[in-house]
Length: 262
Image 1 (tube, rainbow, N blue to C red):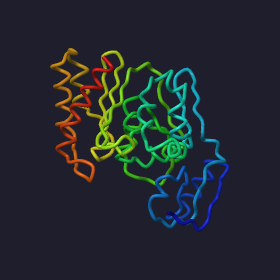
Image 2 (cartoon, rainbow, N blue to C red):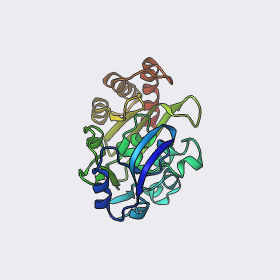
Image 3 (cartoon, helix red, strand yellow):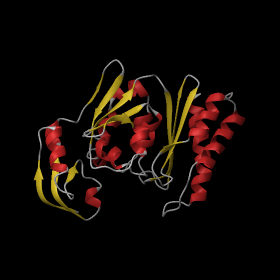
């Protein structure tokens, strides 16, 4: 459980950023699902419910999702399903339970860049951008590779381009954290292969994506692309799986995901 010395509910993004950066131990309070799992003393908690950031809306080119939108909102959204198929729903539907998914927010999850995140690896294979209060609008891939700065995420944008996409994961139990997760998207002949829970944060398998995009789609080349991805990425060992097991299972999941988008 965490302890708050004070709490504020700003009415503008600018006010929230000013309070956040005023003291080192000030912190945003989103759904606070993961904060409750540890022990932390927070100077001023910044609660964002007055900023109206819980929404999913679309225009001709993008779907825009506010930072306070919950995983449950993503799971049942018709807008997301109509534009991107089931990839986002599939990435969040097995996370613990409905009660938990009803408080976990997209902003805190993406900004925290959790290595175990199911959602991040799904968003990464789509054309996703993040809007930061200070850092502006950048691609999700660029954001994941940036050094940490005190800032916060206000919304994300996903480009509407009719990509075919697939999400796969492996777990010890249905509601547990993933041992490894994979997403693959295809837009015409261009593939994007992403791997997360290595247990490091999600990343794009660049060499593998380039190989499968430039070669004929057959079983031999799909197997080769999966092997290239496993070889180019770094895996680690933790309480859930060894790096050798993750290496082996990555190839299996990538092959299954590619088969779903061809």
